[in-house]
Image 1 (tube, one colour):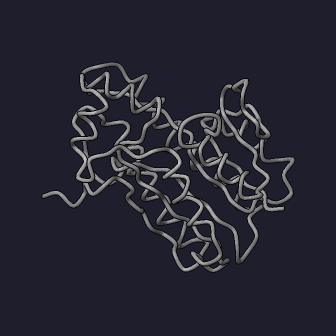
Image 2: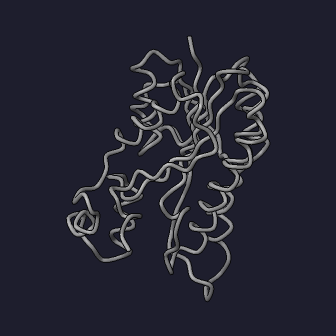
Length: 230
């Protein structure tokens, strides 16, 4: 049975990915800082920003066929505030991705191993009050491209997905920050709708298929056409 590790796998996009993989017959290990009572998957408490915790979570695993990095935090930050949120966002989103990839790489099988990093459309453009999140997600995109080249000789692929608005708790927190409704957010998307976590999971699954073995080092936008706007 194929083994997948999904970080941030108890809620939002991570939970949708874990559910979809389990439905497709994968054995799934979810990593998150806190468990949820209704989580049906194998679970280990792990803060991905903590390198030692990540190493401990991966240590019992003999093989990891796929790693999906969905853990992360967000928040509005400006440079006239303190540095706490900046470091927390960079540690979780960027350093966390590095820690889990480093732990997974020795366990990924040559020829079929897969890594998918959940970045963001903000890894491809900027937003004024999201300096830390943009920096972290741009970093994830750059890290993805470099790592893909590093492991290409092994036949391991590394890609990033860059979602726009997705109907998650994190998005609703952002709506509150912006003072907008979900309907207003959807109206700003060319397709006129906000994506569901299941749609992002579908894209992840596509990148894990054998037929996608030629796709690596890419940052795939899943954002309803916003990047096509002038």
